[in-house]
Length: 222
Image 1 (tube, helix red, strand yellow):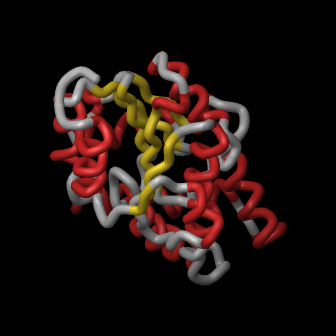
Image 2 (image 1 turned 30 degrees about the horizontal axis):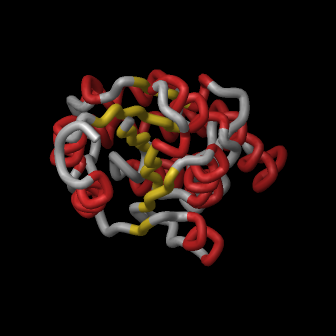
Image 3 (image 1 turned 90 degrees about the vertical axis):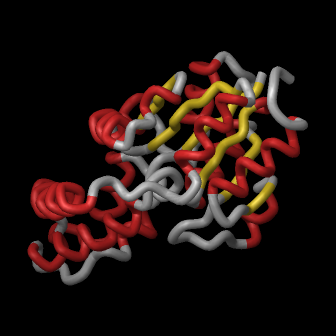
């Protein structure tokens, strides 16, 4: 079986950079100062783990409801004006993989409502055979739960699944699940540990498609 599992934020969509702006906006209104750097600390984690990281950073000054309110204001207005920013090569890679008889899944730490909305608003939802989100598993990335669930939903062994990721937590999660990990860097640049566990690091999703064609020997059934 040919199978590819996609992270979402920072991999399919250029939304991590938007969240930096949103959290800067929210932090200033919460009296915390510009808090955009928290994106780097929470990248790849689900809501519960993100909350714990914020609480460890700001203690009693952290107000989750206020963060959601102000960040939500910013994101709603940003996406209304600009749409969801799609990463280079996504619209070419998805049909290309389908032509290679590949089953596709999403494994995103973001909650179901936002994942579904983003996939549908960018007209890519129908490409995916399974969508696994952060609120569908008990443990967040970097634990392997979400990738194991995605592999199971595709009916594929982890060793037969390529995982496309941009974050450290995501790559560790996929690797621990037994997937073949491919990285397309976004805000996070790989360290030595990550370089040792990834099968390849690529500049964009077009390059990922070229690599998978080489691995699988072109189009058609394997």
